[in-house]
Length: 242
Length: 107
Image: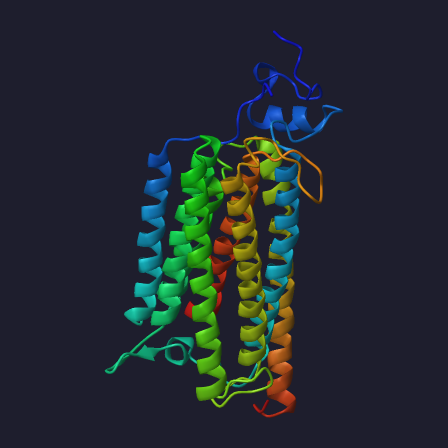
């Protein structure tokens, strides 16, 4: 076996124990714990873990105020209904937004796949398509907010439909999520540009970290994007459907 | 570099999961559309929610193929949130009762 691998701290794949024994071995190896996981990916996962706690705090806070208020909670199904000329359809915009985000997750996962196959054109195009879906999601959210603020008169401190906490939790939670999507769109465009330029083929060093560009960055970007989708799954279920 | 180039899996897995996510989302939307209420509603919503979350994390985010040392490090800490949820449920129950007693059902 060629000992040329510069990642000398990584045990050879053959030596790695599977299952629970592997967990114990990896954590007690006196080497890096996350074998076969690039530095950037481990850091992204740790960031996502911290972000999980941020969103969970919001959602638990929402649960607390909703359970403790003696004023009836506005019916999300009616508040977020939209009519196209005829009868209002409940939650239709939210449903469309959900499908858009899922679709974007699909194009993202394909981008990661084509990235590892070093298919520059497909990867870049799929990343841009993902960004486009993300941008349309944010656009719809802006529309939803406008409708809620202007037509329904929802404010963070009160609304005509019921409990005042509805507005504050809604703007806080969806606002924070929308902010994540917006940052994701920028991140996607940035990565797409680098893929297109061939930075990950030539291992061009990043302007900030000076680390070599590799296609694993597309996967790391993907983790962030899927996380945003994941958070939406919880918001959709707990805020809009509950 | 000698080590394996990232996560490469057949596209079929992704397409299947993608389709399932659509089905499950439609399912949870239908729960609202057909005005399913009470315990059936909460059960269905939570099942759809966890099924979707599970599919995204395990396949799209590759936890199915990562080593357990990583997935445990990421998935176990959030389970502490259950404690927070339990505490806050008790606390908000208490707040609710107190409000009922002292504000006579007002805000």
